[in-house]
Length: 535
Image 1 (cartoon, rainbow, N blue to C red):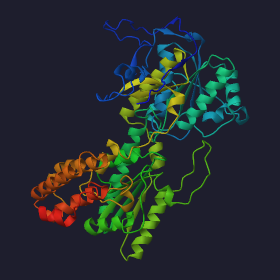
Image 2: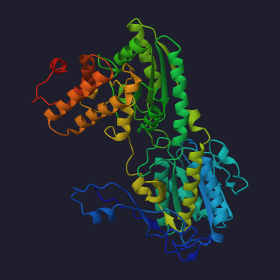
Image 3: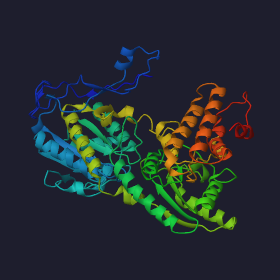
Image 4: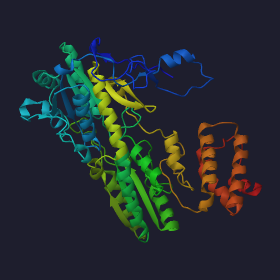
């Protein structure tokens, strides 16, 4: 694995005793300070057969541990802290603001804390937006509400104008809460600050409801978003089951990453079709989504489709337009699919009772769940510890269940996306018994899932694990074709016995799951017919 540079930039040496009453000796009963020499492994898995030297492998992949330092850089009574929230709304923003204010005030004794309103637009004097002074009383119960008390915006003035305002405000710590575009802006600000020779710490707290920032195990707000999306899918499922050929279509967030859709699908097990940006799918034709939907409705009389907002963009008219944050403007896949489904059902002379649900803005504005709230509290508190220790150009992240420091430049270097060959997507596929594969998926990863429930639920776990084994083996191309052929026959025979179904039905089931994914290569001749005869 390529070594990554997790080195954290600092403003200078730390020589001031921290006012936090902790111990420096880890053998003491009390909670201890964190030393800069404490690290967390980036990759906790190691393959013994690797050519990498184990010692070099470990040294090159260490992330600096977050937490309070015994020696700090800033004198607390000289600190003027600024807090800014940018980009779209997300559950937990107020929780992070509250945690930063309370940690500055109660742990470090900082008494000058200023909220910059409406994102980077608030740093433009031309907008004449007043700042908001913050203290524990003002933020006392804001965590019970959605949104952000500071307001937010996209875009903003030039980086020079931003730093001019920061310099006039006499800030020496700036906490930037936002997503990929916001953290790009934070890095530009930090670089301009360094260029001017100023001693101002810039610390980022990653906010992305899409969970798409790299080196962030989980972004705050994602858990709340999934909880809200689950309710939308449950409603869609209820509506779909309440009508002949009922169809529930739910669109969730996910511009370039399908994590919300994937997690929601796993949490509900009600989504029959899951569409994500990372995996292309066909719409028309005998192996397209519409044909598969017809088959599903013919068998079960209802269906639920879960689609991420960035899925299927190749099916829509392309545009090069961008928003104020620099994000490409997407076509609206939800109404597009709804119209195509209705048109198709009319064309084939069948009913379509379709209910379209888009809970996006309700999800964004929701108050954080308790688990998200406590995560936000920890992120905010550790952001303060990093700033007081003079860390800059740094993002606070959770990685391998430890809070760590990540260089902003590294975090924004690439977008985090769902791996179509990884375990999460494989688990999404395994939530259904019968997996139907589109023609487009023969060469590419599977793009959608159908659930026909045609096999008794008492056998679900066994069949699911067996099918997953066949699928995993075929994708990884492990073992010879002949051994995989034998495994296929054994699995099909087991399914036939367990489900009390004819051998040809069991064979057909596995054939759809395995043969079309190139389980066998052309050098070992086999066919659906001779498999049935062997069974």
